[in-house]
Image (cartoon, helix red, strand yellow):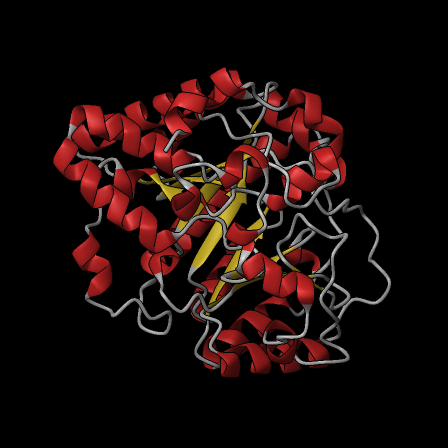
Amino acid sequence: MTGISKLYCQAIEASDVLRYNRQSSCLPSHLLQFSADKKPVVVWNATRACNLKCIHCYSNSNNAKAVGELSTLEAKRFIDDLAAFGAPVILFSGGEPLLRADLIELAEYATKQGMRAVISTNGTLLTEDNTKRLKAVGLSYVGISIDGVAATHDFFRGVQGAFKRTLRGIELCKKAGIKVGMRFTVNKHNLADVPAIFDLLESEEVDRLCFYHLVYSGRGSELINEDLSHEQKRNLLNLIMDRTKDLFAKGKPKEILTVDNHADGPFVYLRLLKENPRRAQEVLDLLMMNAGNSSGQGFACVSWDGEVHPDQFWRSVSFGNVRQRPFSEIWSDNENELLQKLRTKKQHIKGRCADCRWLEVCGGNFRARAFAVSGDLWAPDPACYLTDEEIAK
């Protein structure tokens, strides 16, 4: 992820990271992306079931419980192993995680093991009761997906009235005192709603806003032709930077991030190089610490049935199953060829990525997207919008 507020608006300095020796166990959540040890943040798709019908769902979720979901006991053993391994965060996702009757019990279990627990939800099932309980068990954050305002959101979610219920979920989190953020996956259908999402962020006094670049996975594979053009991506990043800067200027700083396209880091740096060269160098230092895409190293996904993936979008690849081997053993397996190649991917990247001046910053961008388009894991990510001139060494 690329922290626009952190980098462009100087919300953090390199010294803020170095103060904690860059160790995951010591870093606060907002600095974890700069860790040196890259202990994995783990997304657990706790269920495949969902009460909505999102057209871009990466997990192909539906309104039926999937066969083989981890039981409560299996989930607790999994969490025990993550905590002992030093994974700093478990992100409960889905489907819709609130459809698991034991979600709050498991979130509490994770926090008692010393982990930070967060959830990613569509927000429609949040209630006054469960938000109070989530706050009481020490949940760190609730990320709520929103795909536009009013009719746009309902179109993407496949259910009329979803937008109104999602806004209610945001209000309930705020009322309970839980940090809450919005997650917005940008494509051609909702690009025009981006300014309105910034307006909503401000009017609803939401803490955080993440813009996700489209990844061609699950039902999202059917939207490949609806991804933004390279020029639209560039314009989007400039708009995000402009609006974030405006919020800071008004004394309303928010945490604004972009996710799943690591070309965003160099793009921010190149803009700052023209506007504020001194800050640009500081940003480059932070980007080098971040090191770009971390799928298979500092980021992992475990499915509802226990399969371990490099990230939540890449379900055709499994390194093993936590029912047969603990996650810690799977993740530390030096004999797994693909896992080791992902951790040395700069040696295997092809095409313009291999010759790019930003390879150390970007990390080769998103392998799942490259594979989805070309069938070649090491091919260039087609969503990289940097020009040949910008990547030339």
